[in-house]
Length: 252
Image (tube, rainbow, N blue to C red):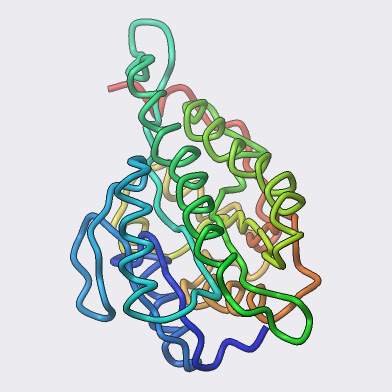
């Protein structure tokens, strides 16, 4: 798909991987809008809670009306809710687990549904393509360490919906992909300190460093351009594999 001059929405585009992807796609000639709870000064912005379906639909429609026919929609929103699930040091209860699912899994579905609804209206290109929807998962979905049950389950749900949504939307010429990043240098991670953070940094095989946000953005760009990428989850992790972790990290 030709991205130059095309319109895109990045949910979670006010910070981290999303913000860098906004800047990257703009440099590549795209018209990019941002959906987030926090304001964004780099692109047209609409506030929305990703877990609230009416808000998401309204935001997608408002940005599409402003930018033009949507060709790429990326979701980088998410929340963690990490901690032990049982015992005297537990801090993840049912309400926490539910909220992690609502933001990560339900939010990804809400955005995919709203985006597909707008993309169906697009004029197809010469290959019959109308758009691509990209969700963000995590390698924790495949190899969750101690204390990440809620996050792993929520991101695993994103992985699991990728193929069925791609199969469903194929008749409209809409692709669905998921990127599962490993450790990336976002402002939140770069400022974190402690033994767990040091341990995480040491697990990346090559390059022997966390990923750079622009490398995530480049993957999004490539997915947008390559029509054969559809219905799959791509690990973007420098051969990182998550070990089991330690209970002690979650004990106050």
